[in-house]
Amino acid sequence: MNVWIEASRPKTLPAAIVPVAVGTAVAAAEGVALSPLRAGLALLVALALQVAVNFANDLFDGLAGIDTEDRVGPRRVVAAGLVTPPAMKRALALTLVVAAVAGLALALLVDPWLLLIGAIAIVATLGYSGGRRPYASRALGELSVFVFFGLVATVGSAYVQSGRVSALAVAASLPVGLLAVGLLMINNVRDVDTDAATGKRTLAVRLGARTYGHTFGWLLIVAFALLGPVAWLAGSAWPLLALLALPLVAQVAKRSRIAARTDGARERGAAYVAALGATARLQLAFGLLLTVGLALA
Image (cartoon, rainbow, N blue to C red):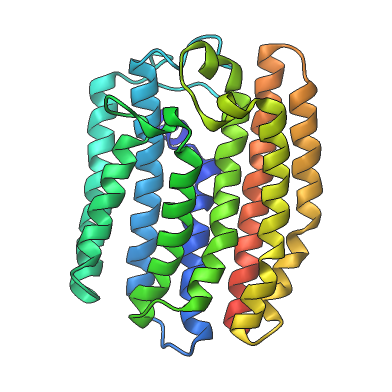
C-alpha cells in the first residue's frame, strides 16, 4: 500500500483540491445554493485524474527509459521495479474508471455536454507522457496543467453548481492554474539534466534551468497580482485574504535556491523534494484562503 501512495505523489494533490474548492466558492459568492453532492463528485473527478496523470507518467517514463538510476528526484515505482508495468496499467485504468463514473454522474445531474470535457481530459491524461508523441516532451506540459487544473477544473466546479460560466470563475481560475503549473515546474527543473540526456524536451530543457527558474519566480508573482481582478469582480476585498499566503513564497524561493546549489545527486533530489513540498503548501494555503475569501464575499 505504501508503494501505491508513493506512486500517487501526495504532494501534487493540492493541484486537484484547490480548483474544486475555489470554483465552488465562486458559486457561493454569486449567491448559488451549493450542492455538496456535486462538489464531492467534482473533487473525486479531479483527484482521480491527478492520480491517473501521476500513474501514467510513472508508467510511460519508466517504459521509455526516461526514469533512470541517474534521476535525482523521488523514485518512480515502475523504473525502480517496485510495481510491474501490467500492475501499473491496471491501476491507471482503475483511476480513469473512477474519474469517468464520477464524471458521468455529474453530467447526468448537470449537463450532458460535460461528458465531452471529461473525454478530452482523459485523452489529455494519457497523452501527457504516453503515445508516440507525448506532449510533455514537446514543452506543452505547463500549458496542459494550466488549462485542465486551472481553467477547466475551477470554472467547471463553479459551473456544476451555478450552471453558467462567469467572469469571476474565469478570473479565479487564472492564479489557481499558475500555482498548479508551479508544482510541475519544480519537478521539471529538478529533472532537467536527466530529461535532456534521455531526449525528453520539456520546457525546462528548452529554456535552460536558469531561465526556467526565473520564469517560475515571475509566475508566483503574477498569481498573487491576479487577486486584484478577482476581488474587483467579486465586488469585495475578501478574496485578498489569499495575500496572507505571500510569506510562503519566500520559503519556496529559499528551498529552490538551496536545491539549485546543492551538489550530489541524492542530496539535490532531497532538496528538490523539500522545494516541492513548500510549493504544495503555498498552493494549498493560497487556495484555501481564496476559497474562504470568496465565500465571505
